[in-house]
Image (tube, rainbow, N blue to C red; front, side, top):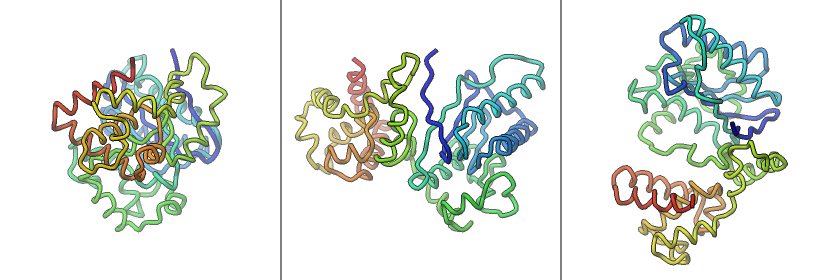
Length: 314
């Protein structure tokens, strides 16, 4: 089976997620959650990594961790493997617990670390399990706002990155409770999240491996620069000239749709798309958020977006 490339290195920050096989529960009771956290603590000790955030949900989990060595695969093999053995022994079962391999995204610390902690801690709120992250027991949120709860999180190193007091962090998370934007919409090549220069630097590291047949995300890596060709196809379906779609027009839905589908399908960074459309990288994010909102409310818009994206696969 084709496997995605992974970028491994020293002092690399990763967002990790892993889901139960067929979306089944991986945590059935409090002892399961506690055992997983025990293995996470042991993984941190054995493989010298730093834990910055976590959230354990019933059928999946999120981690934000930094490796001191190029050993992410070892960390995750130990963590998921140990927990699977425990889970099966407890229930006298066998077989896979997790759905395929874990998903890892290499993250630029300065740009996205803080935003990702908020995203992780708001998982139970978005799932409508609790009204506030402080009411959810199985996340690291309390470690950010209560000093006595910092036994697993590497607070000193984390605080050097985020520079927030507990009160500041509470406000920061509260401000994000009504936001619909996901930082993962800006992931490039399926595995890197950061500025244009960061993405390009990381992708160069795997350039010698990208032509291997067993690499499942090869096409995402190769297609990341093909913005003009995709734009021409989008313009045909949107029934507007390319030049009109690239021109600044505040209320033009077709232009926003073009930005949205190119970001989703080209692998280009926000900065690259911003340069192409002559707008800022933050304006790219705003346009995409507008389209996401529209897709949820307007069937015609959703069908148009799906039609354009489908055309790119032909």
